[in-house]
Length: 330
Image (cartoon, rainbow, N blue to C red):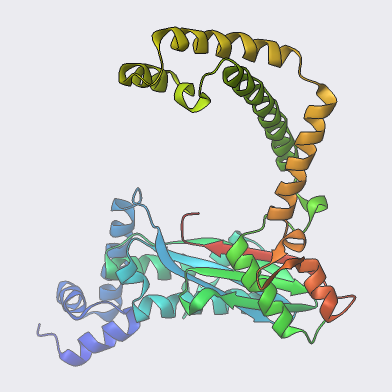
C-alpha cells in the first residue's frame, strides 16, 4: 500500500525518527502506525545492543531546582554532534523535568519514570535508534535544603553544580559558590566531612612522600658534598648519557651510584618519626584546604576562604551540601 506524507509526518512526530526511517517502518508495517512504532523501537534496541561497548563520553548535563529540591542528570551519547541536536537536548530536558516533578532520590526511581506515556529507558532507546548512537543516563544526584542554586557552566550543558545554602535570600552568593564548585571540584564541604577512607589514603601517601623527600634531601646533600651535580645523576639513564657526553667522569658515576645506594639506606634507617608525621600533617592540611569547599580560597578573592566569603555577607550564612557532575575528563 502507498504510504502518505501525512502518515510519515505523524510517525515522525510521535517518534522523532527521520523521514526515511519512518517511511521504511510504515512500509514494512503496511501502514499500521502502532506496528511501525514497534519496528522503530526494535531498531533502537538493536542499535543499543550493538553499541553497548562503545564509550558514551559526550552528552547533555542539566540541573534544575523546584523549591527545596534540586537534581542533576546527564543524558550521554557518543558524539558532540548528537549532544547538540535539539531533539536530544529536548529529551534531556524532559528527563530532568520528570525527575524534579517526582523528586526522585535514587536511580531506580529515575528509571521508573515515564515521559510522554513511555518508560524513560524506552524513550532513550528509541532516541538511540534515531541517532544510531549509544545513549545512557549518568550523573544523577539530588539535594534538599533551605535554598538551592543550580549552575550550568557557560550554559554549555557539559558541567553542572548544585549548592544548598542554609538561608534564603542570597542567590548571588549561592551562584558564586556554585561557580566555585564547578571550577575547583571540591570533594567535601570541610575536613570533617571527608570520607574516612580518603583521609586514611591521603595520610598514608603524605607519610610516604615525606619519607622519600627527606631521603632525597640527604642523597642530594651527599652528592653535592662529593662535588657531583645531583641533576646529572638523578636516574640511571642520565648517569649513562651524561657519562657518554663527558659531563661526568666514569669515576664520579660510580661514586654517585654508591652514594645514592648507601646514603638512601642510612637516611631511611635514621628518619625521625615525629618529624615525618609533622611534615605529613602539613601535607594533609594543604590537601584539605585545596579539596574542601568551605576551606578553599574563593575564586574571586583568593585572600579569603569560601567560608569567610559567606560570613562577610552574613555571619550565619554557610553551605550545607553541594553536588557536581561533568562530562569532561579531569
